[in-house]
Length: 316
Length: 203
Image (cartoon, rainbow over all chains, first blue to last red; front, side, top):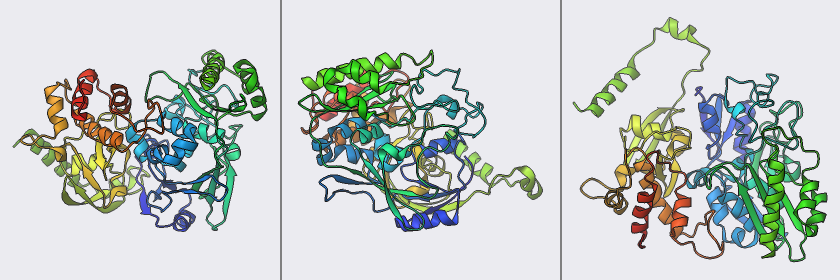
């Protein structure tokens, strides 16, 4: 690990001000992903700003009838919150499908959104990777791509976003609240939060340098049956090959988002009109424009079959 | 001198070896290490340390406090051998910077029980032969103690059926919740029996 200086921020304003003084610094919260990447020298910040003790660790009702989840709420606490379990079961299901108990005890809501891809070529510093080292090329294209993206990818990058939580957040239409160094707050709909890789896959979100996530808000509960089905190589503690997050209403209408297929949680609102017609119709809309490789073409039928299972389960 | 004492002494002498100034200057563009002072309560004892900011909680425990019960397996949060309990919660001590734990309370395997006064989970692992080589065992035991507390607190898991009902210490629940602790020897069935016994159920 490269040496770094460290400071602990007491307030969000203190954190963003600290960044303004040390451009290139990184915020650290749970650290479960960032510290791993620092050990491998994939991330080499010269300065760390510890935001883990900011008073952003509560879940409060919003005046619109939803929930405002503080950026520092741990994955375990979010999954266990009685309101989340009752009204946003999809979110609890996605959270507990991810990582291990130890990691969920450390990982935060904001950090989960910002975790980086587990593409094996991103992790291997002997390989070219446009995300790790812009302009160096992509060894994943034409390489072993079994776990990688089939949608939204570019000629520069076929990495997937690894989060389960973010897939549920996308289906639930969450919004990401931030504050920048000037103290300006804004809310970014999760639908717009992740950037397409294009020619700049190292730029992953719409956050400006030094912009700090303060909360993630959920709109008021939408009812329905909440199902998160994750398909992976072992029954627990593995990243998704694909995952399906769905909220299905009694009349068969609903929402679907996919994990493990793209650089972001994948949702196509227009395809959801077909939900009463079944999985085949929805999957064809969701997967339109897919560019699978030989290694990961299996993801397309796997999405359709998993979705069929989810819709059957929702019917009861 | 014991093997452990010998290792500790040689690590200490290595730490004070000085690099000639000229060589240090030209060796690389590495930024100089940054030091920080922290206070921890470890197994009930107040400890103070001055550490390179890069030091993980795991290395602080093993290399600086000589609490070598906690093991370094993968050092990347994948195996669970480094599991300790911080402020009542199990975490991977390898994926956490010691400097971020200033003021925290840490319980390691040495703090759960002693050879003369075993924690019930330690005793159950012995009775049920819940290990072979033993390397993952401290992490397994710390994790297992916390798992039963998590179930008691009603924290749901991936295999919890009804999210609005209290969780129960079933075999499925224990297995799922222990999935972050890998046992290369494959002692899982005996580990499960040990935890089940402490949970107060018939295996």
